[in-house]
Image (cartoon, rainbow, N blue to C red; front, side):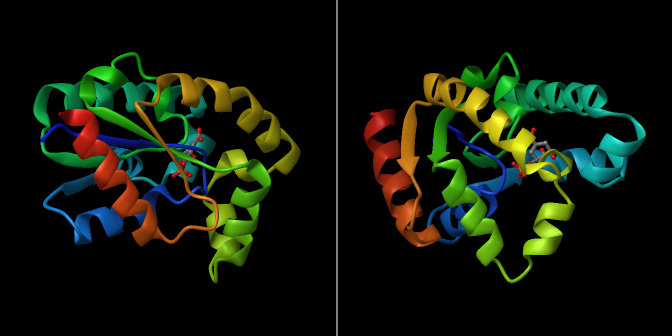
Length: 172
Ligand code: S3P
């Protein structure tokens, strides 16, 4: 089994889909934000505040190099900007969770913990800037993805079924 890498914008549901994939397959899961938080023993928000975004992006590169060398049979969920690491293609099959910006916002707002979801993501604090970032990243996500899954109005389980089916075909 090749690794599966979930990419996509903040709040699109990478974490929920990752948990559902693990519950319905033999993949083990890793999350690049969680890995970074345990590497530096600090929340991402704090890393942005204290060391800045550039340092965070360097940590993402370190994680990407380690993943390429050391990890297989794994479902890897990533932070929304992780796709920029140079070796992404070498880590595994890239699956983009795709949805329009407004739908992503609706999804976050509908969550019982919406406030916390927004608070922990420094790049979502200014929604106008976040929309610009989305517009800039969207074509880059699409260009990199081996598989694209439109997650709009789908449950995590529906997305999971679609992903596992498409990955199976793709890996043949
Ligand atoms: C980021 C997304 C975040 C986190 C960091 C930066 C981004 O992860 O890695 O705040 O650049 O899009 P999520 O996509 O899980 O919110």
